Image 1 (cartoon, rainbow, N blue to C red):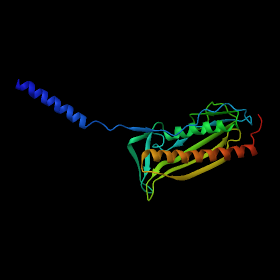
Image 2 (cartoon, helix red, strand yellow):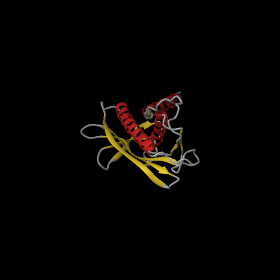
Image 3 (cartoon, rainbow, N blue to C red):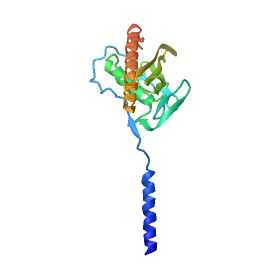
Length: 208
């Protein structure tokens, strides 16, 4: 009898310790991807390829990054993106370019060279440098990225665009941080699309 009670007591103690040591749930966050647009009549016959956006190992993974100084970087243990920031930026950019109605087609590629995706020899390549919370006197959402338009026919970079802005975080919550970063990304990508469309309108690719 005593042995039975001792066994039950040890089992209950084990369950109690297991409950105390239960891992904290991880929360996931995503940027807002524009809805797929209705297929408009394109204003040009340009086929554009958006290659894989590159970035640091942290930005090609899913943890949410924060900076506490010029050189100090950390990641949240229980707050993550649903996808790597580099992938989310590529997907969002493709949707915005399609929505502009300036192209016959806009396709993504997993390679920096454009792979075998259809295109007029024009590849939009990008690198994401910053996609993070910045802590200081005030909390900011920082996005820094650079894109270039590469022409396979001339083997040259024919256009570049650099963007780096901070967006104030309204409240000290992770949801507010994500919203600030996402709003900042929207502003940067829309600026990119407008400037790229202007350049291509003034410098249309030669007919093959």
